[in-house]
Length: 461
Image (cartoon, rainbow, N blue to C red):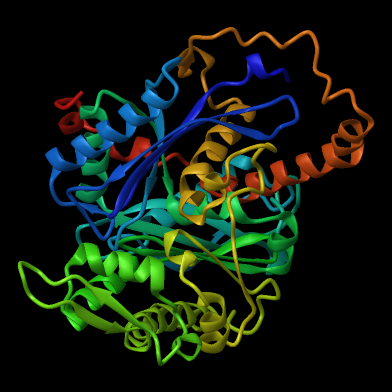
């Protein structure tokens, strides 16, 4: 498909420390070209939950304004929004359904009825089921990971991964976006978006845990046997590390953040005990010397706690020793020095940094390879997944007021090297990655948006 036929998708990541808007479009080779980026400090959000709607709206508007300023030809009308927060929970259930006519083939309608049965699952008061993700299916207790449609049997069953969240918290995010004069195209679980951006098909096959260490929360998505096994939101992340430095060393929060980014390490054994950082004194007070070793111990203590939670969740589902792909760290917190070494020490599993450049076109800026953009790029991939499956209406696309006709001459494309790079093997790799993204997102039975539409929401339209 030519570039001019591809929609422009905008991902909006509303985090605790930052709000990022990225506009992207796929080229003719199926790679994402980043058209514009807007990033601003987040206000009114704490641990992924909107605490002040007016401040959150202003942050969204600033991010969109910067995105438009970087590319004035864009006209952004709708966005894919990431959803996380400490209110997001998950649980595993098993459902079975006896068939009245055992001689007939299993139909899709029966599978949908089995999934709908799970809506009766008991959940805590105030929470609501966001999504029901089928995992393994069973026909007469014989496991089949594929859909059992067309098979025969007396009983059909399945294991389900159920995601729940606080209804009001999710509605507040939707209101903030709408009051910013944007349309929420869909709400996407942030750990799934991050997973789509950093995972390869080999990771999905081997089994991995995606750990997205953001500003306010750490999001987890665990894949095993090619399917989503577990999601979790840990209410500790980068802002907690910054606060620990702020209180532990008696410095301003801005200084604490700078110390963490410039001089911090997640593994104290790698810190030089003889190095010191001089902090200017306030209003005539003498300068303050900070030990690099002490700074590292503070960072390591909180990072160790986050990784303890990661290991706890893996043990809860019995996958702490069965993920051959190990742990993939992403998000802004993954930029901490020596965090992979600490992760391997705490969990006993291999670890690496997941960069969101798996699907990006060549020539993108180095900044876009930063793990802090994983969620936003994953949101764009979700938009293209919808588009390629016929769930994205072309009439509602964001606009780009420039000529999108392909140039008559493309000398780089015609070189032998370029032809080899985009040959049949690479085309198959692109299709394989497309199927991988489908596996991540297809398990979600319904879009999140429809579950939060009601008369009360229409008051804010």
